[in-house]
Picture (tube, rainbow, N blue to C red):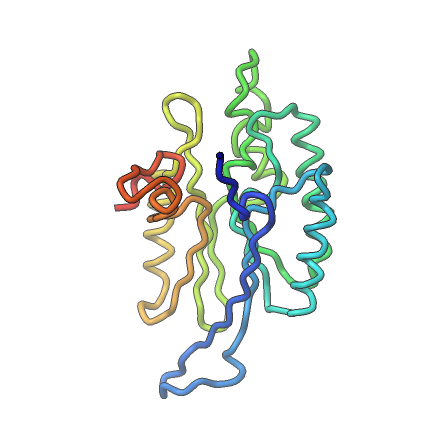
Amino acid sequence: MKKTWLFLVLPMLILVACKTQSSKETIKAEDEFSFAFLTDIHLQPEKHAVTGFLQAIDTVNKLNPDFVITGGDLVMDVLDQTQDRADSLYALYKEVSGEFNMPVYNAVGNHEVYGWHRDEEGIESSPGFGKKMYEKEMGERFYSFDHKGWHFIILDAIYRGDEGHYIGKIDEEQVEWLKGDLDKTDKLTPIAITVHIPFITSRTQLSQGSMAANSEGGVITNSL
């Protein structure tokens, strides 16, 4: 029987509480904060996905964290969809996610990449092909921000392999950017990194056995 993982169907919600130590090794109340992490939302008009997402948003708003981070796969999905369908999914996500009462920092997942799995003639010349659609609709695909003494980094781990399908990889542009970003960050500053495809994972072994190998799409291939 084919196994179905719950986090592929419903958005995963994690509330993270953080504290920042002062120079006197004491915790100040004003340094405490929390943020919510949601991933694999897979928003679409079908399957009551909007209703489920709104319920998650309502829960987050009641918890009232400082901000929200999403881990990618915001929509379901534009790798192999028409331009109209892709546009409508992005519009739906932006509309519904606007119900959050706090800032939202998005990460790009494989489901946000337009056209990579389509073989129609001329698709690569589309103005939204690949991650151009994400950048137009959602903004930067990698960036960082600071909050109450913490440094948060959002990376893009979706890379197009030689056969046209996505694999996990951090491209050279990001590697160079990351070096500069870390150079500007105090070495004592705690850092949190969000990326859709993990740097290291045991998911494959848990689902397929301890000797199973990770696929190129399931882990970042240049993590070392």
